[in-house]
Image (cartoon, rainbow, N blue to C red; front, side, top):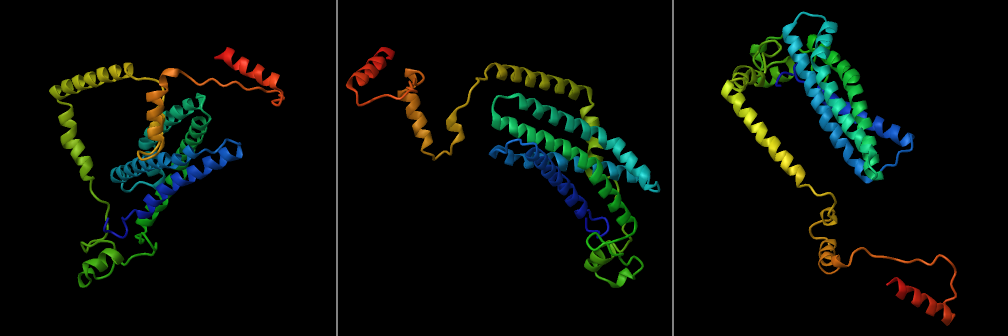
Length: 291
């Protein structure tokens, strides 16, 4: 926003900070509990950031709608209305993510198990920080706006100044609005208007609903067919770079040696007198018998 009062840069930054705190808390707890840290765990913060920012947008949108509905309500009632609208969506999202990753802890691969433990715990902390820390930040930001304070310095801006004599840039940076009017809450967001007036009536049309059902049926049929074509296993060539020497190695191994089956090794665990010719002949005879 161009308004120095309605600008929510710090609000968005605190939403990202909330995700960062969740990552630090979960990693610290898992390391304290002795869960091994593997390389794949380093990808977890990106997942947590995506979910945390999504929860942040839901909270901000609910707060904006509550503010428009109840402009003169107390902060307590606004926050209660925001949680009533947003908490259910955030809770369901968190529960499904946590459940999915906790199921992954049953795998036999230790690296995948560690990754799922770190990520699922981070989702729990992300939910806690969104419901507590970010809610408090929403209230503080609301009080700053009500006090007509600058978004960066938190100093009161000069609403009572004669704005006609100032430039548009000065009014936007130091007074709160480029339109030479005191900064006020915006009207309904254009995206909300689009979904309410155009997209909603379009989707609820009976022919469109029939088309949606047919498309979903086709998608479901394709998904079931795809599940029947899945082969279990992993191609190690997909784990290497395209220009890696590993690629031709696996190509040659599959081309020339795949018909011989798995390699078999025999280990002699006792001390052997290799200098004794009789012992050497016995080992060679044993190897021939195994072959």
